[in-house]
Amino acid sequence: MGADMVRVRFAPSPTGLPHIGNLRTALFNWLFARHHGGVFVLRIEDTDVARKVEGAEEAILSSLRWMGLDWDEGPYFQSGRLPLYQKTARALVESGHAYHCFCSTERLDEMRREQMRRKMPPGYDRLCRNLTPAQREELLALGITPVIRFRIPLEGQVRFNDLVKGQVTFNHSTLDDFVLLKADGFPTYHLANIVDDHDMRISHVLRADEWLASTPRHLLLYQALGYEPPQFVHLPMILSDDRSKLSKRHGAVSVTEFQVQGFLPQAMVNFMALLGWSLDDHTEILTQEELVRHFSVERLARTGAIFNREKLEWMNGVYLRKLTLEDFIGMAQSYLERDLPPSVPRPLNRGYLLQMAPFIQERARTLGEVSGLADFFFLVDVNYEVGLLLKGIEKDAHKQGRDVAEATPMAVEALDKAMEALEQAAVFEPEPLEQAFRVLGEELGLSPGGFFGLLRVALTGRTASPPLFNTISILSRERSLTRLAVARGKLEPTRL
Ligand code: GLU
Image (cartoon, rainbow, N blue to C red; front, side):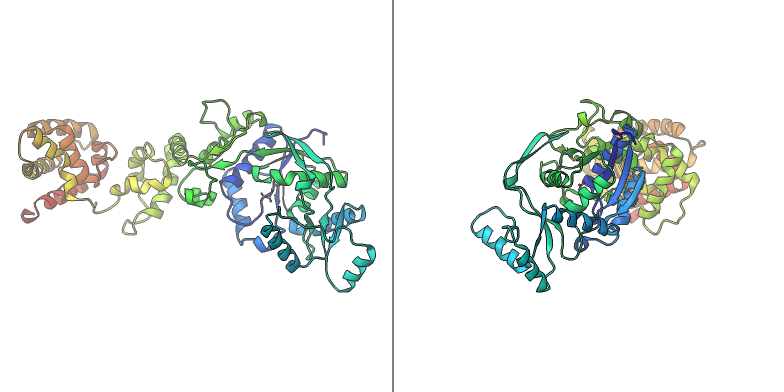
């Protein structure tokens, strides 16, 4: 391995479903590794047994796979490496950089309460820092299992150059003697994290901004152990539209949820890459290969990145339209079969999907939206308010100086003529249908907006749909006639 070989890691804790922030960290590490021809390591930091969530590990792995973020080494599990951390903690005690602490939870709780009462900064009061060997033996003889704490040098500063934040300085006086090894023999995050970064020869640590405050502790540990520290790169925070920290109340934040809602992994990758990184000040659409080619730490933002769901939906629409029709249909079909009411028989007919899909592919922003945009192609009855049928016709009546009440007989007449025209249409194709209906509209004295709007609502139950005459030809003569008759019945219930 060359001395300047790039080795990075994604080190999630399995404490919940992976969210946007976690996977953005994974993505940036992956892009950095691939850009430099380096190694991307996956390490599961599962030493916090109390916070472990069932199924989280699997969700992390499957989200990474879904986004195409393949790893070269691992997954390593910290829970399987306990002896290494224990050995390191003991070595630190022997070299005087760490010490045994026998303080009980009750004492520490009381100390914390007292610190809060006196508005003092929280932190261990170092009671056990200078125990004599005899005192230690005595406490051990009482059967108390100690924890191991790091001995922070009392004077001085830690300085480092973060590749995003620049020069960062922390005074030792702001750091407390944190725990390295717990009484149950499990390491804390700090210990396991640096032991592994060293052992796995990690060259760059790209991680969330919230870990910046842990970095001085880590650097002191590296120093105490005589290890060369990696380069640190703390990534910009992800904020919501209102500039608060992104959280569940801003909609789906777990990546699995985005998958369920019908976002494409290519779109998620593109979108997430732009959360705190940019190529220039205008390029929005970048493929995974382009991202790998251009990714650089220099173009990481120093300030928070705004998570804009509208933009994500727009971008997903761009990626949906890039799919081949065949691929789009494959995906749309499974979402339709998931979302359409049970009355629609499954599996859906391929030939029929092939006809309607291009019109939906043009419009959908997510696959989850497909059934809402296309259900009228499949349902037996479409539902709508009668008033919706008359919207355009009422405007025509008004323009012609007629009473609004006349809109109903005007619409009934229009539907009757439309049904006649559909029955007589020799070629059931969009263009000849449109020609015939344009002429008919003029004969009826209706504007295209009024006449076609009426037909659109009658056929689809909505005021916006794919082009009307394509819709009619896909629906077929029979189904179109039935829907027009139903609309007529709604307008004139007694004469049906
Ligand atoms: N296990 C930590 C996390 O869940 C890793 C932080 C780091 O990358 O050092 O984010």
